[in-house]
Length: 339
Length: 231
Image: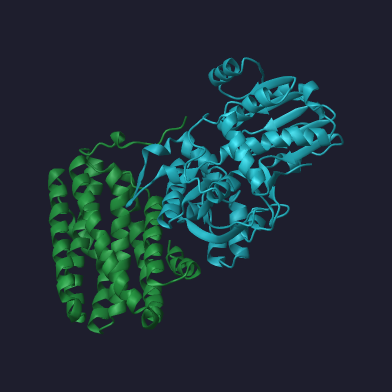
């Protein structure tokens, strides 16, 4: 059995979902309540591969909300993730993906040091960040969507915003070795990490966001922030492909202009309908078929009975591992969302 | 990178800490004493489980002695008067149910509410406890899981006929726990135990117990809401 640990995108969203699902007592509660709410399994999922294989899964709502980070309720945020992981393990789930902010919180606050959660000792082999598949899917989106909108990679400048992160650095490695992208612009907050990445790649220009945007034919946005970022569309090239792989996704709704193509990054489409309720709750356009690539990674590991933390730790994603997960992604009928 | 606070920031010898500890320590001692007495009464109500319940009762008595030692170790005199008043309402509800032979209500109060609350409090306390108290509390938590289990097993076996009484007992008693929690919120914070962490841990334990007994996720969310209304 596979598992997905997810959360809602804002307090307002959480209240609306509680009302919709018929829990009026919860719909009127503020952030304090969500800081004390326990994790719940809210959905049972069946996925059928194009090979005909069927697997079962569970969706664990962690009750984490991005406002917890924005208001610095760090302890609450970290508790949500550890408790959701303990909940998944207690329910015998073999491999669980840490969706949305879950893996970011796990990494940033070194939650590996808190292995004991009440009477459960977390077995990290049972969890994956799903980042290898997300990075693979975003790379395939760069390759395929650029063709759709008439951008030639061999002549294109690609700006990676969040380049030093787990996903961002993997994308840079793939674009460097597996494509003929003309130029890579590396954008991140930490200069030291940027220089390390540049040294590893042996290429790439370190730039500030404002300077990089007017030069980019393709912008890959993989920085995750508790609040969305607004980009002034006037500074962007025409055409420009903007792949929003950040979380929560909010570039698409804010930017509209002819010649600008905004694509939800790190999203896959399955070839067959998935029997679940949760993706309509997280506002996917086609909830029966579209999902986060990180979630799909736990499904792929379940299909392949690869019960291991395939994606774990920071900056461990190799191009070979991306190829490996990519092959099984195609085999079971997942494909990147395109323009 | 942001850091999580650590227990090295706590001064166990400060007057402020010891003052808060005098109430929290008393509550724990009183809680164990009440549990000891409650299990003896339950043994009278459930004579077929007498041996098991007397064993649990004796275990609670040992826990009480352990926590008394924790207070002495920090040179704190527990404020037992405060603790007696703190438990008065739950105590009264248990006594009334016992007098009327309502075993289900007694089990909900002792085996579910009090035990879940104790486990939650101990779990949250352990990482911020002084070394002496941490060892004692770790030992206690292991035992507490076994009491919780007694109530769960009995209620699960009698779920159909107990369901209505469990719901009523939950409605009456859960709000009391929330009020109790609010009463010690400040003291708990002084000891680096946050209210939202305590509530969350309690809801996890209580929800799991209700789930093991036979309630669905939807039932559990509805039952837990009775606590929230009082929060």
